[in-house]
Amino acid sequence: MESKWDTEAHREATRTEGTTFLGSLISMYWRYYKSYCVRTAVKQCGNEYPRILKTDLWNEAVGFAHGDITGWLPVGDYELYGIDISPLICKLAKIRLGGRIKVEVGDITKIPFGNHVFDIVLDVSTIDHLEGMDYGMSITEYHRVLKEGGILMLLFDNPLPFYLKPLQFGFNKIRFDNNPIKTKEITYWMEDAGYKILKQKRLFLKTSTMIIARA
Image (cartoon, rainbow, N blue to C red):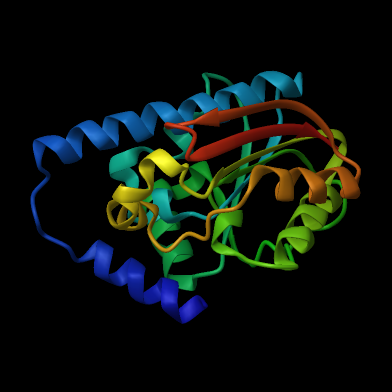
């Protein structure tokens, strides 16, 4: 898995093709979309100086046309950490963001931090690269590293509704090898792990779900 994302990151970092007008509009939408989810989660925290863990550093390393965590967060003071399974993505994120984020190589099913150390965990379309029992393992790991009362935000792709099935090929390219998940499957794992769901919202023509929960 690490080598797969190293390869994808290298390919993206060395691309030289220009941005189309449609591509610019899509990027603008994704920046707004992800910023809305992140800011909504931070508002639920209530800590003036939260310690935040961002999983998956693709946007911070190579996909920053859609924005990244430093732009999605509301104005304020944060202690910001990030993990990614790819050593190359971690390296590129460190180079690009410098001291604004503390980066570790790590898997969300086995997070390389101790118990109860974060006020907020932000999973911005990371969990939908997993499948099967790994959903439960990652959600349990998020609960472990969150402080009591801490906030988890999940943003993940859903299977396409019937009226978008003819556009399946195009959506699969946009989703970049994600594994769409039914919302009820994720809420099952969250409730089993002991979260209290605070907010749940379907987004982007009901192709994605945002869930904000308290540990």
